[in-house]
Image (cartoon, rainbow, N blue to C red; front, side, top):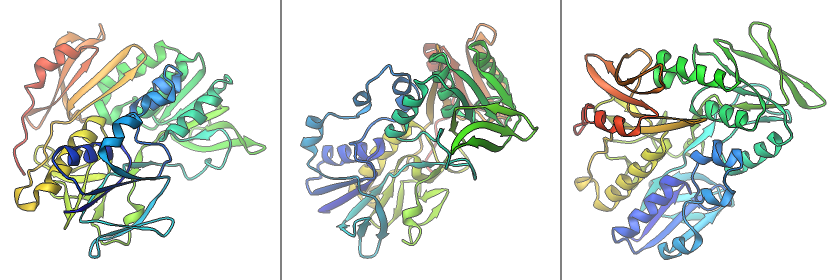
Length: 390
């Protein structure tokens, strides 16, 4: 194997490149990235950088001097537009091509958008560092902010905007923030946390449209007739895997790039990170994990298995781990916390807002959640079943 191409200058893509070199690959290593910036970390975008606590360069994953030893052929500001898995060629948006013996796909996600409003000034999505810097510049003007979507990203943006002493309204169709991620009982605590900090909540409500004047958003209209004045709107209603460039390639696609248990896609091709969809033995089917820790762990597995070859490849079956920060609260999750699970508080209590809860489904523990309890949570991490090979 002399030529490996990594498409996606992401945390997963950079980890894959570093793993390949660390494990002895000495051939040509090309990384294609749609943005002009070198790989950077995304979790700080909705928190430290949006708040102004970090300068943008702090999100960069490696300084330039650390990238040089990798011998990367960096093609930044270039978008992959197709793959020919038979000829083993990646086509770029400028008509150039990159030949490969091995390919790792780590293109991540694209923000989901509403069917209206995105042509208006003041309406934002947040995925890239440039998105964050543009949004922050508008927040500094002291606008009225409406955040549509109360998942991890939307809730973090709302908390950050309140930390800037802005008028913030959080809208979601679900009964609580983070409902799909942690269920209603813990989600209600998140809702109360936002209320305690002055965020207005509009839950169980759907956005019906946006009002505007002279091409700029002025309000968000809800399905019950409520009109919320807004100078800035952030749409955080989830993401979709960035696979549009693969639509005519013959690469198997579903909710992401479809892999086998070892992250293998087709001959010579592996996938890692948010875009990868693979069968997980504990989850009971195929999953994608939109988590920072998964980006690193799966990239290590994909790169290792690419070099090892299909006959020696090992399955990837992690216990998922993720976290979110709101105000002075850190919520950490091991495993899965489905909304319909039974919750058992095993350390602390809900009222003190310092606790560990186990999530039970189908007669077994499937997840553990810590609310401002990182040390106590580690003690209960062992209660989760370790996956076996698929």
